[in-house]
Amino acid sequence: MLKFIKQYAETIQGIDIYPVISMVLFFAVFVGMLWFVKIMTRDHAKELAAQPFEDGTL
Image (cartoon, rainbow, N blue to C red; front, side, top):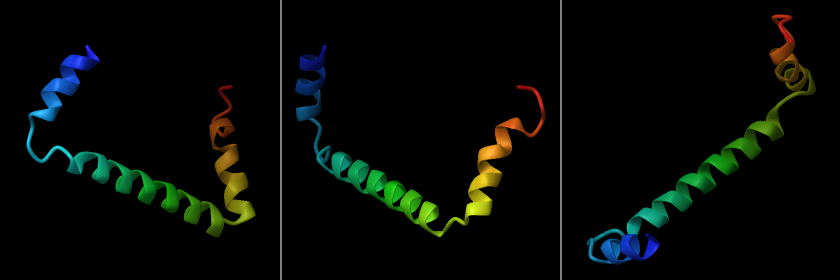
């Protein structure tokens, strides 16, 4: 199955940009999450940690 997909993908022009876009998007989300965690206060982290238990339906 992978051989068929690989053979088909090699014939598509301009497909080489998709891995680059995927890597940039992944890196941007990863850096964004690191930044969010870095600026987050302890109180906000505790509030987020307690959210699943707020409605009392554990």
